[in-house]
Length: 155
Image (cartoon, rainbow, N blue to C red; front, side, top):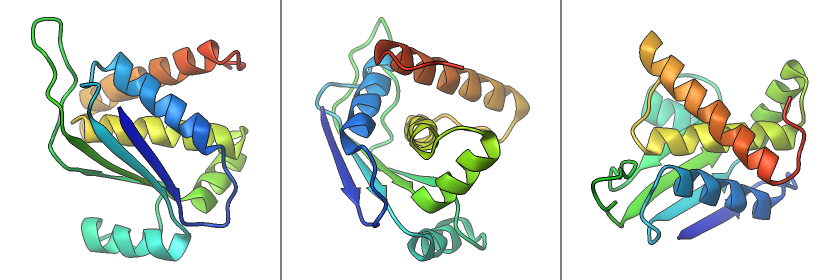
């Protein structure tokens, strides 16, 4: 599995942990082992440009996902397809503000947002209440199992 992290900001983050989390999520979702994923960290002006260009919404956001080959989770009865999963774009400064409001660390917020972004790449959405429930439960389970495997507290 090829997972690349490109930090285009001055924010220091544990890129290795983002890669380990991404690998955990992709393995749990049975994505082909030769799939490729890119995680990019950008500043607020860059995120705002992407947010306006692709969502027609003002201001920066926390995470955006740009799927490439529209890969989907594998299942027990079919082999997953290899390909380019796409890009997850994170904005650490927005994540920092959200983390402070939520009462956890910026690193934890970035893990949450990375998981969220990967699920979007795999076709999950939260536009409808039932979709939101499914996606957020899966997101929580994936993040908690990752943190438990790393020996981190799971509150």
